[in-house]
View (cartoon, rainbow, N blue to C red):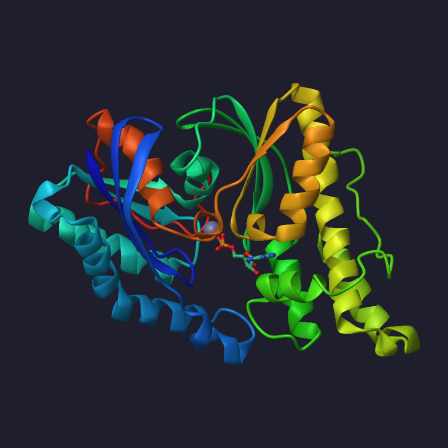
Length: 334
Ligand code: KG4
Ligand code: ZN
């Protein structure tokens, strides 16, 4: 079955075509993304109104591009999967309404997908992953540990009590005047810095070893920058030391969960999974305990529609469809 995926939950507008024969066995025919970084850069963060208005402009060309490079037309498809939450509601509505229009006009079945489910299953686009597996989802909006028990069955073990890790990267990059989006910029800059130069506190949540907290680290960096030592610090050392703290705060609960579950595989996914230091350190620490780290390649870590098509595929393969009255939900639970 060929499935068109549509994703517009935040600032990226994406469409993809995947081919699947049974749940989890997929090949990506095409995956197109229209990135809005240039639009939001001037504001140092995503402006929801601008995001949704730009989705309106880019959604049709992006879908056309994905269909053209997959070599198929609407008539070849078996269904449409679209993100319906969580995310920015104005952005979600653009993708959802476009998908409903396509479904109505073509008669194709439509399924609404949870964006987090897309991230959780994304490693399957390229790897054979055996369920159940432990997954750390770490993005601009989420930081959480899940057990993926089966398609549609996800058990949350822990999550952030405040900011998401990606948010910490973006906020620290902003206060350091490095630009937007911050994750990739800090990752690149940190390669020239010393990760042990400055010691930032590694927050732990009392009596909740599988939870995370990232609001303290950005205040710690801000306070340090205001000090004499901070003012003299090389930006690369500061970036590397901050990144090291975030990486270690992500690693501790993840490894604890892996030990608790006896998991032989750890999946790392979401935009921050693109971080080179996190990938290297977590994979090294997992290997030292006889575990394997699986992370999607960079294009499937950050928001994309191939993961959305994949997350919709097991329902479409079962012959399910959602009513065209489904709504977008900013806080859609998994
Ligand atoms: O999954 P994603 O594309 O969108 C959300 O669903 O949030 O994640 C975006 C987040 C941003 O906060 C961005 O700064 C972060 O992922 N990010 C990174 C890297 N690349 C993207 N963070 C750290 N290192 C990176 N290389
Ligand atoms: Zn995402």
